[in-house]
Length: 109
Image (cartoon, rainbow, N blue to C red; front, side):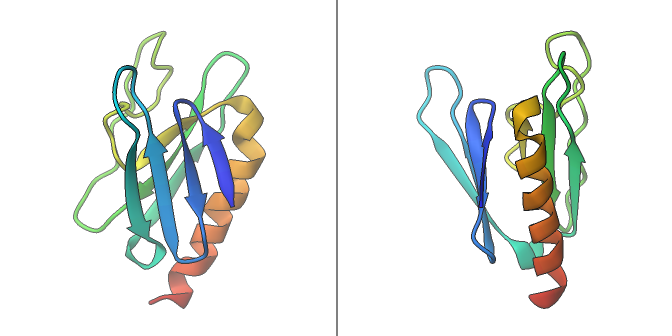
């Protein structure tokens, strides 16, 4: 399962979540999370005006603060390794991915 985001992507293979991000002028960075380690998920669907985001919360960490302003549109900062901005066209795929992660969480505990 793969979701194309803004300057990156997020995929889930049933056990591992892989978030790949590329900032302007930098190499692609990949962050891998086990679904068993995720304590919560957040999904804010994208709209016609603003991108949304998908975010995974780990034990001992708090959810990233949404950055305000016209350019950020209420998303976590790009530097947050556990979230990815998504365009409106990826809303359905992101919802399916989050549902799959939520289903895998109790099975792996």
